[in-house]
Image (cartoon, rainbow, N blue to C red):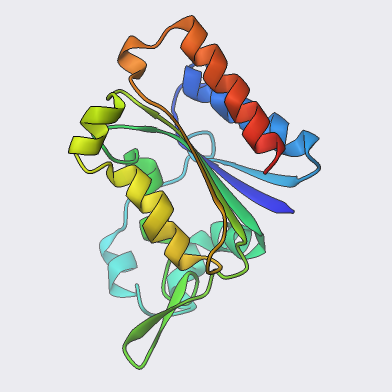
Length: 193
């Protein structure tokens, strides 16, 4: 399966970097063809400019500045997001990726005023997330990243596609043992992806 891995952590030596490497290694060992989209390493520009917004609905002109990212998304059969959660949301670079790449004509089209998905070729979705908050605090805040993965993104891909959601909560009080256990869990789950 062709898997697009979206990674958004600026520090390669971080635990987020280790999760990224573990995800890539496990997917490759499982026989998947992996496209590693490391947004920071690639220098992705997350800013939706005035011009981008003015042509937002003008397909295919709206894809001109991001053609390679659009092509990568159109080729993929599965998507895995590896990212920290900051302030109960995705880092700006990842949010900007969705704003700038998941465009009309690419991820959806409007038919008689209704949204129709164009990403039904994506048959599986995964997320490997780290939170500073503990599970209870994330729950009280509504856990927006979990809802984005399990509801919003899932609604845009193949209906009833399986979702693998892995989260290491309470990173502010994590231990070497908790991080090692989570890395192993990511290895197992991505190995079965």
